[in-house]
Image: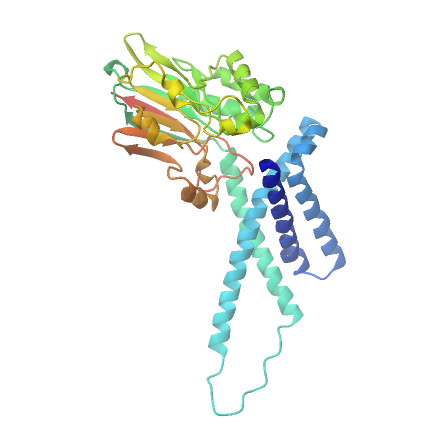
Amino acid sequence: MRYLGFFAILGVLTVLTHLYLYRRIFRDTSGHPGWRKAGVFSLAALCLLMMGSRALALMLPESFMHALATIGWTWMGAAIYLILALFLVGSVRSLIGLVWHRRSRPAPSAEPSPAPAPAVSEERRQFLARATAGGAMLATGGMVGYGTWRAFHPPVINRLAVRLPGLPKALDGFSLVQISDIHVGPLIRRHFMDAMVEQCNALKPDLMCITGDLVDGSVSELSHAVAALTNLRSRYGSYFVTGNHEYYSGDEEWTEALERMGIPVLRNRHVSIGEPGASFDLVGVDDWSGGRSGSPHRYDLAQAMAGRDPERASVLMAHQPANWREASRAGIGLQLSGHTHGGQFFPFTLVVSAIWEHAAGHFEENGHHLYVSRGTGFWGPPVRIAAPPEIVHVTLLS
C-alpha cells in the first residue's frame, strides 16, 4: 500500500507538471489550433512514457526499450529544469515590469487623474509568453545538455588519505577503490561498465569495494553488463554489499549471481584482508532499509562484528551513511557509504544536503572516518549537475 500511495502521488504530480508545461509553452504562446494539438499529443505521449516505462519494458524488445528509456528519463530531467526556468524567467520578467511601471508612473498632482491605461494587448501578451518560453527552453537545453555529458563522461577520481586506527605498519599505504550507486539498467550498459573498470584498474588498487545500488533490473536482463566487474583487478579482490535497489531487483538472486562471478557479498559478516601477520577487517552490512522490503536480510551491525577482535583495524562497507556514529562507537575506523548521490543534480543537491547530515564527501569525528560517495553512475534522469560522478581512491595510513 505504501508503494501504491507513492506511485499515485507521483502520477498526479507528473500529470500536473505536463498540464502546466502545455499551458506555458503551447497554449499561452499561440492560438493556432495545430500548434496546440501538437502540444497536447507530444506532452501526453511524454507523460505516458514517464509513467508507463516499467510496463513497456515487459512488452517491448530490449533494444527498443533502451531508446524509449533514454527519451523518457532525459525528458524527466528536462521537465524539471523547464519548470524551474519558466518560474525564474517569468519572475524576472514580472520584476522588471513592476520596476518599469513604478518608474514610468507620473508624480501625483492636484489635477484630475487621467483615464486608466489600456489593458495589455493580446499581441504583447503573446510576445512576452513566447519570450519567456523561448528563454526557458534555451536555458534548459544548456543545463540538460551539460548534465547529460557529465553523467556519461568518465567519473572523476577523488583521492583521500585516511589514518586508520590499529592498521599494521606493514599495510601503511594500502589502497582501496570504492565504486557505488552505478545503477546498471536501461541507460547504463556494458560500454559504461567496461570504461569504468578500465579507470579502476588504472589506479592499481589493493582492494575493490562496491557499496550497493549496482543494478536496477533482474539478473537475466543485466548480467551481461554487470559481468564487466569480473575484469576488475586488485591484489585482494572485490567485495560487495547490498543497497536498497538490490532489494527492488532481487537481493538473493543478485547475491548468488555476484558470488558466481567471484565477487563475495558481505551480508552482515566480516573478512580478514591482508597477510596473516598484517591484516585488517573488512566488515559488510546489508542495506539500512532492507528489512522493509520483506526480505529476511536486514542491516545487522552486531552480527557483522561478531567474533572480531575490537583492537584490529576495520573498514565498514554500508550502503547508507545512516548509522555511522554507532558504527564508530563499535570500533569501526572507516565507513564507506553512498546512496545519496550528493543530490545528483541541482536543486536536489540542496534538498539532499538538508535531509542528510552527511550528504557527500569526507567526515571525521574523534579519529573515525566516513566517506559518502556521490555515486559512480546515476539514477533516473541521465543528468549530473553540481554533483559529478566519482570513483574514490583511498590510501590507508598506519
